[in-house]
Image (cartoon, rainbow over the protein chains, first blue to last red):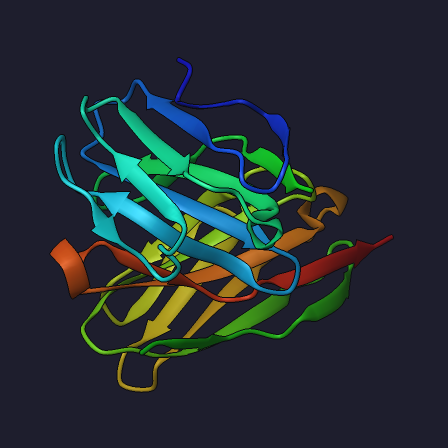
Length: 110
Length: 112
């Protein structure tokens, strides 16, 4: 079982570039989430989805967009990267009890 | 809004018991979760509480008091591999009942 798979694992972007992070889960979960984790800040929710075709804003949605066209995939887009978006990004999926996280994407914006 | 507090760091000895506290303020409580995160790795699920009381799972137990906005994670028979950060997270009723807020985490060091 793959669980939750994130790609890529590492990426360096220049300011103003765009990119998409992909999250895929094979557990048939309805709920999927994107978080960022910064030193001393803890995990902060960016966007989430409660089912195919739905998305909702979390705590820090500005500068990010998401799409959930297929139940198993949740995409996080950065349209114009900024140094403040340097972080570790985690995707998670789950039902009501317990959630599984992906291994993370370390993004650096220079 | 929500606010979650945890101690920043704790130290304990191998074989001992440690209690990590978490206090929270939220509107529309919909569950409290504990996660373990080793350095450089993803968080892994430990426990879930939605009703008051103690949930036990092997060496790990989690307690919740909704009226006090308080939870703790109890780790027994500490092992070196328990050195990690422990994250408290509260889910509230906003937006389909899936809005999560994480605390800053408690870094636990287990010493021999």
